[in-house]
Length: 590
Image (cartoon, rainbow, N blue to C red; front, side, top):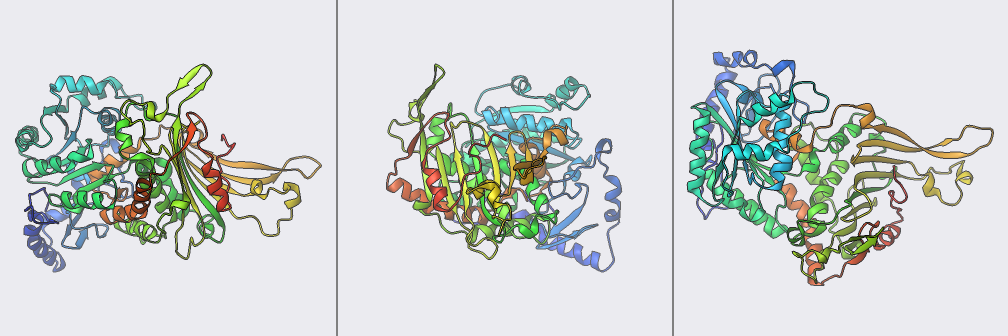
């Protein structure tokens, strides 16, 4: 049973693909046969036919091997070795795509854009280089730009790199990958052009079972056109069809809900993979492992021991080259409402029942629904201004010719959020995100409470914050986890020092860390949804920020100016002090 894209009437607000409905009855009969002990002979023969390539066992991000076979239908699932509910789509694992009778077809829509050239094609090649793609796959680029297959290959070859820890001939791998890449030019709203794409895909698939993955690397205003055309003219007739959608997912609750409604006219929820690449970053992936597999952390992961949590994002460059796009959204929509809020939900969620995607996403939704709506008094916004340093001039945000001179769009924001549940009641979660700052950094900082009746408080002086234990997860750059502790300096006197227990990834793990897009693309092929955003999760996230965003725009709040290359505006320090917090990154160049 396989779900494929199908049209629906324009009057319908939601849609279940007809192929899924038609095959539910057949699957129920199959389940009955299994329960009665009349297993079809092919069931016992599936696993022996599946072998990982080159002795390499693939695993999805939830840790399950990709060669596990499962059959699903109508809310029930049958696994030969492991039974888990996975939703209503009959998702065959990637190993099914490796079967000689099937072919994986990946279409990058918007193939001529920067994201495709810099991230998606390199990520696909990296997966191929690591033997993580099935034996039989093809990659198609689709865009309005007129281009031949050879021109596409020349374009993407300039951005492909090989793993630094591999000795295998890089040029041979690259040539073999590029031979599998093809191109078709067309309009994003043309059903005829997608029908032509379908013909080319079928020629390459040569009558085999086809599994098709579409990556929408395009502006959000044409998402629905592409999904409509793909569903009507280019969906798989024999396997699964999945669509990866890039952010932004709307500008507020209303536009996000409308986008979801329109997508669901042509796709089931299980076919939509809303990507937030920060969820694929190594340290974000390690967050739940650190917490749930180490006894030392879970008991202190609450208001009883944690004083505050800080999520900090900074970039050392402005909006050069994309000011027009950025001005429609701003830093709150671009970074805080998705990247940082997703990290917060993973950090604060309760222990899920299992590592199944739905169990984890259920817990994240509970966190988001427990959060207080953001108030204007708990938010600071800023915008960078022109600055000269060492005879070099840096432009202001409004100096960008694509940005209105009177723009009030924030390039910096700080906010205090609260989760009203038993675990986190009263603990401030502080977010800070900005562009054109003094450094590039993304990190999670967990500041613990002061030691009650600390015997050594006289040695620290009046500033007990300097003696606070702090756990830091540096997401980028130079991935690291370190815990700040107090210890005695060797010697005859009693002098205390603050030191780090440090796990620096580059020292401990010399292998190159995969890019986030590699992990997320592999999960989408496998049908693993844990690192993708569900529609109700998206609704809950927007409900927190939409009232604030409307108030900022209606009241025309003027952002505080800060120099390009500085630490940002002064306002966030007052916001932190209001909640008895000191920003952990001040004077900290770890």
